[in-house]
Amino acid sequence: MKLRRFRDWNMSLKIMTIPILTIICVFLVVLFYFLPLVEKKLMREKKVATKHLVEVAFTLISDYHSRVGSGEFGEEEARKRAMMRIRAIRYKENDYFWINDLHTVMIMHPVKPELEGKNLSNLEDAEGNYPFREFVKVSKEKYGGFVDYFWSRPDSDEPVRKVSYVKLFGPWEWVVGSGIYIDDVDAEIRKMRFQIILGAAILSVIVLILTYFIAHLINRPLFEAVNLFNRIAGGNLTVTVNSGHRQDEIGILMDAFRNMVEKLRSQTRQITEGASTIASSISQISTTATQLAYNASETSSSVSEITTTVEEVRQTVYVSHEKAEHVAKSAEQSAWSSETGRKSSEDAVSGMNRIKEEMEYVAESIVTLSEQTQNIGDIISVVNDLADQSHLLSVNASIEAAKSGEHGKGFAVVAQEVKSLAEQSKSATKQIKVILNEIQRATRAAVKAAERGNKAVEAGVYLSRQSGDSIDMLSQSVTESAQASIQIAASNQEQLAGMDQLVLAMENIKEASRQNADGAKHLETESKNLDNLGRNLRELASMFKV
Image 1 (tube, rainbow, N blue to C red):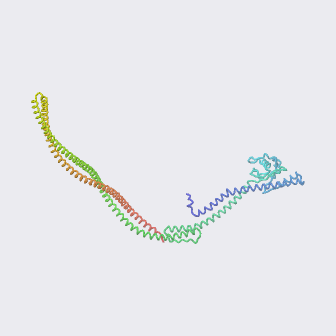
Image 2: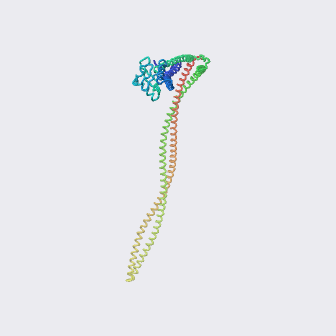
Image 3: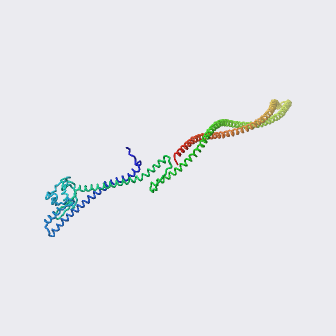
């Protein structure tokens, strides 16, 4: 059989446990503390009583000894009288006194007179002790004391444990002693133990009987309360709880139970009414949750389509952004090229202007050269005239030298040299004139070419200026186009960022819509569960009779 735990015991058994444990504790204390204490005390009292008895005998011997001193008796007579008196003394039926001397010789023994006059120093007890040696030793050392040994009873030869008190009477060297048998003390202790145990047992039985009736008085209202609890557990709240005007804990419990039943009645009525209200509300909530779940599903589908469209627009914007960046880069390259062309055109116009200026300077130089050649021609004409005149003069000089004869030969030579020089000069002037004519013809051709080059340079300057203006206009257009392309690219970038944010927002909206749909479905499920709970609540409330 399985032993139940203490908390599973019934109340009567728990109440009975208290006195049983108390009785067990009392018995343990009595057996293992009180009785050993009483035994020790009883043994101590017995030993003290024996000591007093020996001292009485000692006083008797002292009295006879003092009477010897007064001359009433002789010492031998006094000893005999004292031994006779002590031999005749009995207490507790068979207890007696004996006398031996310091040489372990028995002087007087009323129970075993055959020991009188014998030396008992070698008398050994059952455990190998020599009691008379111990008597003499204790008497000499302490003038008195207790000795444990084994000795037979007067009516038996079987040795038993005995405790004797011995005391030395010095003047006569007598050792007076008497003792008690331990088994007698044990018999008294057993008798006392039996009486104590019997009294404790009777008291325990009385306590247990009283405890049983008290437990019955406590359990009866508890059983009534359990019966009421079971009726309430069966759904009957119409029970009547009566505390019987008790003022103890049971009465307090029944009052609290009565208050609980009244509150349960009220709460059950409220639960019934609330369950009906909840059922109605849950029906409406369930309908709304179903519609909400349908709408959330439709919204989620629409958001998915919008998200797809936004993603397509985002891809289109991304492609447009790439094209705009490419156009912006091309526009920037064109702007740079047009700016380079504009600068080159300006440099060409500037170079043509410088060429024009140089052509004008060349034309002026050619004109000046033409004028100088004309002057040279005039000078050559003069030189030619001078040559002609020199030739004429040389001819005249030759004529005059001829006329002079010998005196004129030297002059004729000179005239001949002058004539030769004049002819050479005339020949040179002819050559120079031919060269000058060629130079003049070339100069006139250079002037005409310079005029034509000047006109061509003016036409080139005009065309370069027109080209520069066209390039300026093209540069401005390209610059504006580049700026517009950059703005378009920036706008596309912002639009692309906005589309990314829009896509992210649509994803969030899509996720929120999905969560709303899930929440709506969960709400629909929970509404159905709550509806079932409301029905169960109504069924539970209907189980109680109020």
